[in-house]
Length: 173
Image (cartoon, rainbow, N blue to C red; front, top):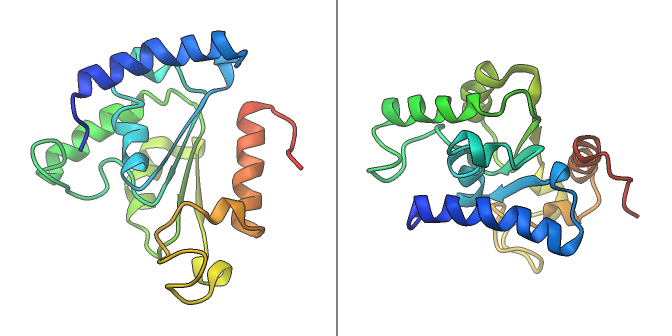
């Protein structure tokens, strides 16, 4: 799932500052976002240690989250150990904002994350049926997709407002 975790984390630590410097990005306004397995990686990799955790001003995970359910051993199981490790990673948020969005019903993510993060977390349920109708369709094959922020609707508006608040960047038109 993650390949060489140490190499991946080291690469991010070197490349995020380099890319910001080379392309004029503000290193104080970098938000780590991920979808599906990438959503798990937001915490699993993005909060792997104190040094990488400091690279991000905010975190956005859509459709899954680190520590919520068991995955493939050795890194995501057994669940008790995995949750303990994820809890340690979540402490590295250190007060920074977290947006957890999902396009499926259920409270498992909120139940695990909210007590650990408190007011710094925002949870957003996206009504995929309201956005796309039935599945499959011409736009997406199923509800588990990352295209919803591109469609006008309350979910996209809430995510955009969160992003603007976290980064301090002006609204996009």
